[in-house]
Image (cartoon, one colour):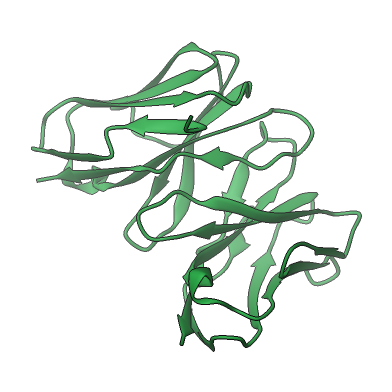
Length: 113
Length: 113
């Protein structure tokens, strides 16, 4: 079955350092991937997306890398700030199931001052 | 001017009661969703509607009944509430085609006692 595997670890990062969050997915038919950020008491917020015809996409302080060979996705946050403290989710969309997003389990990022 | 708004934000109720959660989006999207987030932060889709038509209906007890009076609204009615229904419920919206991410509401924390 399709799944996006991401255990819920906690990543502690010193303010100013770079963060890397990893995600494995199992559905090779997925062609669109998204990273979401969820702060306490709020809904998930879109950060960045990538389509399967790309292997890298950059945003403001964030970079998403896609390795389709090993079905792996990562989110890199440069110069992590206290406001980056949140739970981060990867999600995949195979386009065939009514634009259904399947979410991974999330990673909590704690930024230490 | 909230894009996806849910009410209420908190809902505490006794087992066996019937309750509803409302959702409205002003983004002009044609598809709306309900997701359930458990205590471990795992997000799982429940339903999606496209232009008032049910598109996705995951394995959800039939005590849960979504209703979409128009494409800007998707409400969730829950009958005979059980302790295991306690969770945070998120509404989201998107366009159906083109591989777009979702815009989420801020969630409704349901506590069944």
